[in-house]
Image 1 (cartoon, rainbow, N blue to C red):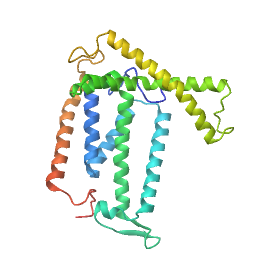
Image 2: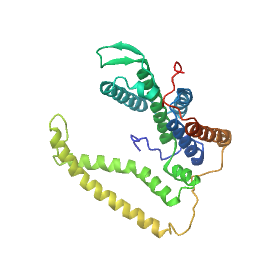
Image 3: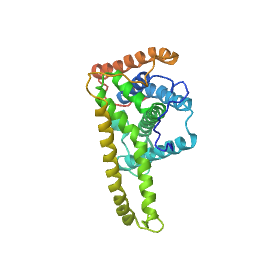
Length: 284
């Protein structure tokens, strides 16, 4: 299958790919929660390095991954520029100081604290994004459902999530097939020959058969699950979930370390109550 959407249907052979869904889901959730809980670069930077190592370790399609990473990076830089245009001294609010480095006008200034905040924000976002990218490309929908169920998520919700990921490539394939079929019937979708408004109207016409096809597939899945007695029992097992391999046993202490780190960060935030969000080494 042409995996343009990074949906993995068969497990790979790398160290992370061979882990159980339970370990993958727990590590992913803990790492994302830790990055969400702090603006301290001393905590974020190691996770940023770890996210790069993780992504490289699964041996992804370099061209596609680099393209999407560059796109996300450019979008972040553009967002920083817009933030600076609206509020050039944004670092004063987040860091608690204002050291002017360049002054274009009385309003448009570049401060060390604003640049530091942008750096921390960029590293934090890219770490979260790279971890998510690694997670998506190393876990199958069935492993995702099994991993969610291992943290006590009801198995019916796990099945919904699994089916949603499983059929994203199918919906994408149906969209392409309908688009090609419409084009053979004379529908113009080429940006060089049709205007934006015309193409938007044409794509609406594509969505109608796509929605009908999707509902038909949903009905078939629901009937198949009913015939197999799905939902009759309070619990279920997953054929994709296997016994812990060597990698799971190695990473088990790391899961507990991340959990303790997350709890520690929240306790410090509640008890210490820092006056500003972003830590800067030159500010006492």
